[in-house]
Image 1 (cartoon, rainbow, N blue to C red):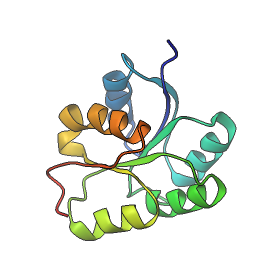
Image 2 (image 1 turned 180 degrees about the vertical axis):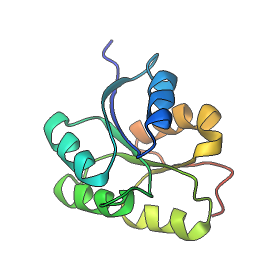
Image 3 (image 1 turned 90 degrees about the horizontal axis):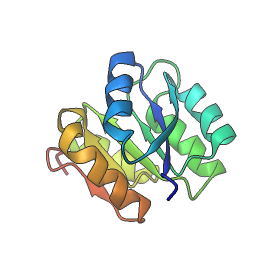
Length: 131
């Protein structure tokens, strides 16, 4: 059975490595990129099943990148993996079309379930996020 494909975006290289290790048993990580511009390029080139991105990145942040991606690829499935637990960020993520919102502190327990839900077209928000 083919593993679902994922592109990861975060400006923290150590975090990217850890997330890739966390996911590799169930998912195929096609690329790890460090900013929104590279995320858009990777998504266009690789057409992943799912995108996991941080919000706060240098240059083009994750929110803006997601907005651009959804305009080009309305069916793109996006999960934000972020330190921001405030409701305003959760609302903005939903507004740009992301189905998933995972707090980095909860990634070990929440990210894989979030990916499973989002791949089925269902929303997922970490319980730690204020909604």
